[in-house]
Amino acid sequence: MKLIYEGKVKAVYDAGGGKAVIVFRDDITAGDGAKRETMKGKGAINAEISARLMEVLEEEGIETHFIEYRRPDRMVVRKVEIIPLEVIVRNVAAGSLVRRYPFREGQRLDPPVVEFGYKSDEYHDPMLNDDIALALGLCTREELEHMRATALRINDVLKGFFSERGIILVDFKVEFGRADDGRVILADEISPDTCRFWDAETGDVMDKDRFRRDMGDVMGFYRALRERVLAG
Ligand code: TMP
Ligand code: ASP
Image 1 (tube, helix red, strand yellow):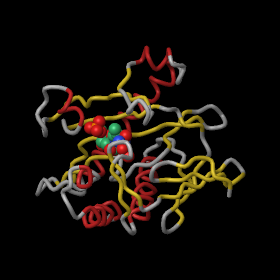
Image 2 (cartoon, helix red, strand yellow; image 1 turned 120 degrees about the vertical axis):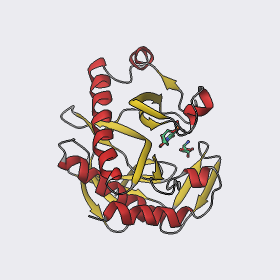
Image 3 (tube, rainbow, N blue to C red; image 1 turned 90 degrees about the horizontal axis):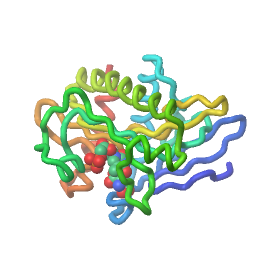
Image 4 (cartoon, rainbow, N blue to C red; image 1 turned 30 degrees about the vertical axis):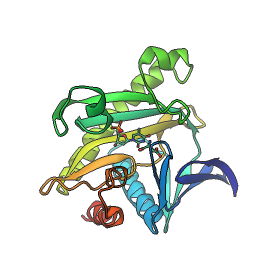
């Protein structure tokens, strides 16, 4: 298969017929790739979690690029043109939000906070507003509105899904792409690399913050998260 895109932890191949295959590698990075490690089995866990969550969203009527999970570390998807925006939804203050503004970590955000970032390692994914996204020609106003509304629907579905499993969905990042018919659909991945998950009982961190903040046992918690995502 022809390589279309090589990211820091995933590679995307053209599978023909309007399809692509995403291969999740065992790499884990933080700080725009400044910190990196390899963890055996991590790619497979993220692929399986991402595939299941995309399925859940499809069942709720949210259009995604997902076609099928290919064991152990691949997803077959519709080929899309990725819009270089990171759409972040936050239910609880954490991460860069508490570094940039006077929120305290753990503070509930109701209604949820939506942020757009410009996807660029060179510029360190700066937050941008609607006008900047439009002036950069990244998307249309209608597409922006659609992404914001869809991200909030995704939040509603996933918040409920995780709450039933005793997990707080603190925040997450999603990306969208244009399909060949011009429709803007959910793309990329949804995994412990791109979300924050806290155990509702113990407060345990079950996501990539374990790596970013050197909390240890990254794989143990990723495995536990997979069990709970696949349960029920
Ligand atoms: P932040 O608190 O660092 O801004 O991150 C918010 C959420 O977005 C968190 O769940 C991690 C996720 N995220 C990514 O998936 N990729 C990124 O490049 C960044 C900056 C955040
Ligand atoms: N900056 C991103 C993160 O820490 C990803 C990366 O730097 O590799 O989530």
